[in-house]
Image (cartoon, rainbow, N blue to C red; front, side, top):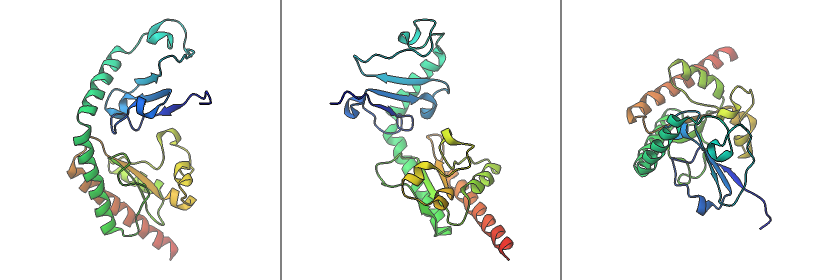
Length: 220
């Protein structure tokens, strides 16, 4: 009612949970194809009917005059197929990913009782993502040790990778700086398998034990 335009970054949501722009009542919404198994470099911009945008890239009338230059036809077509497939399989995929996340949490907690599940609501969340905190251990150290085993996890968003600072999102959720620095995020996708959860859990528990052992050795 105040004439303020609202944009939402739905990159993490589109293709994973139901998204309806009419229900959300947003003016603009953006998404990235690679987040729902499309090609990198292709994005989606929703603009509510009647709203105008000024182009940032001039030189042609491509993309409704908003971005001059030859379009990536292959990327656009791939994005269309990818989102159709993701939406049609959403319920089935979400159920399987939730089970994988639950198994991961249960098995890690059985080995490391002090592990902290940082994510909030157990239902209103992305089905394949979980953020865990390991007391007394650097999330950065865990991430590097897992990387050596061919397992990719994260300590922050891709937008802030490379910065030696705790996640501002975790800090905003009320975590201390130390708690935020002890966190890693595990993200499963539709092509991950239940067997891979065993590999990931074993690798995390092994890396955690090694870090604790090294710390105890230095403390002596």
